[in-house]
Image (cartoon, rainbow, N blue to C red; front, top):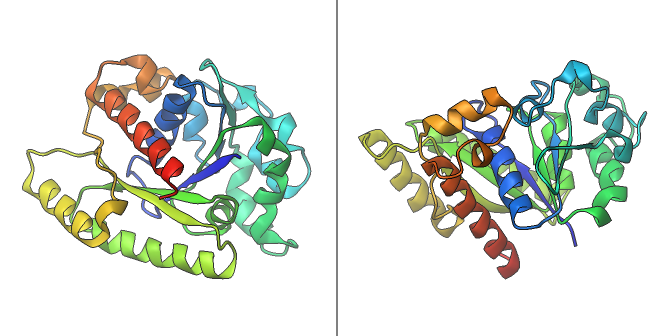
Length: 257
């Protein structure tokens, strides 16, 4: 059975796309069949895997709009076992386009269903907003990972997101669960980081991943080279942290957490 995981946070710059790319790569490295779907109009997931948008007509936009088949919009990456359904500029208009569409909350779910049998994991990289694109991701997914930067306002933002996830579960997707909260851009040298971690762990307990993603230059550099951090510098602290998170993800799913 395919596991579908959405990476969501209404706040930008928290390492969401970086996490999606590197967890996808980590899962592929242990022989899992992985599809990464880029739902962010910025298209950073594709860029981070070396795709120049102008060179590829494939896009999740037509899939959501019902004008293209999902299978025709999947691209192979340089990572064995990892495919991507890229974004496009047109996706920026999807929020408006979806307003008057029938079954607008389930467009992505229905379009991706024919692909389920071909993958072990489908990862959905959401835009930094709680609009129709993120809603479609959360009605498609059975789990959510919330990347969270360790900063002063972290807990305030995540509380709002968790309430929205609960509302979506009640109204549209009863199978949706929070797989975990992932602390990113972690720098133990700063008291603010340690305080934010303590607040989040006290509030969400075991829902917070044991592994934290450190601030790491090699992870920051990797997207500009169009490759995941695990390929750019496998031995970097950031790459190794993502491998440990992937292990936690697999263990949590196996336990049904």
